Image (tube, rainbow, N blue to C red; front, side):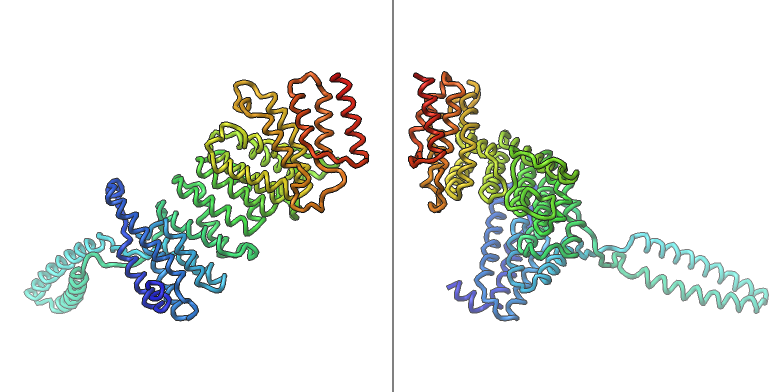
Length: 524
């Protein structure tokens, strides 16, 4: 019934939403916020307002008049001082969705931000102006009295020429007195209007929320236009150092989103984001980390270079040829610093930061931005670590990632293969006090066998004559021969029996047979 009403009566609905919104949404004072009853009422009102905004998507906006009316209503609500910050993002999303041209979207949101941040407020005329008039009026009255006394003296002395001059002077003073009396009789609080810049946390948070939503909705291929750049310089960057944590957090989100629109902007503020990920409050650090991960997903680890490469090697990759330019060396140093920082975050005591880092690294590896057996080993160990047992989001993310990543390509399986021995060595060498000492190494080895199984590939046609299991078998045999008396040899031998070894004659098969003979000779 309501859906039919909304669809058929867009004009009536815009009037309804404007009226209902203005009635339901009310601001709370600090005392009211401490009252749970008042807080519950306010939350209910916000929910009603949210549902009204969501219903905007049900309107038939194909007609120009109805669309313009809805845009005007949303503008009016956004400018309202009592509009809750929690509804700003949804309002901007609906507003931008009604506009067709991206330039118009940017311009309109920028104007709304200007109206919210610099509203036209009434100002009272200075009080001392009326006081000044009263003093001047008193002086004029005294001058009139003195002039009249002098006039009487001149008349009694029959000095008519001077009397004529005094009479003219008295007339002028009377006119001035009447004028001052009229001005003084006007209301003392004459109202004028003037734009006043607001810098309170609530206002800045609203403006930054509008900015963030705008940058999300605009196509990143468009780049940074002058209006967007002005918002960055005048609003976002100053707010990054704001003392209010909520404002700083939203400013970091805005900066990270804006950086997706311009690689130059990302390069300029990359160091700033790196500093925030290490120095600020946990929530803000996580926002900066997300912004950094988004940049790496979009531009790769060669973010400081002009051209992006499909795959960026991670810290355990060998160095390139000698004689590299100094600039390239600095870029690689920055990349190494970023990866080192991300690796350290995996050991963070802050659960949310650790989870966000693991999820970000999983995305980077799955998208081919990072190819690193060392980092993959860290993720596997983190997945098995008893410390993360209660972190359901982390466990679910890594569990899905490992399956999808290993099955996607032969290259990924080779990366998993290379991470096998480092992972097992870490488990075997873990001290008794380490949580990793509780991990079942046999279960971990079985996981690696399943992840590298040739039949697990999404495209079986990609299976070559020498499978990943063949290479893994050679690695395990060499590890056994390093120290046949080590306690982990039994598990390695058991792991060999789980592998799908290629039985066809070939160099790999011959090498494996020789290694197995060496092992048998040593063990017997």
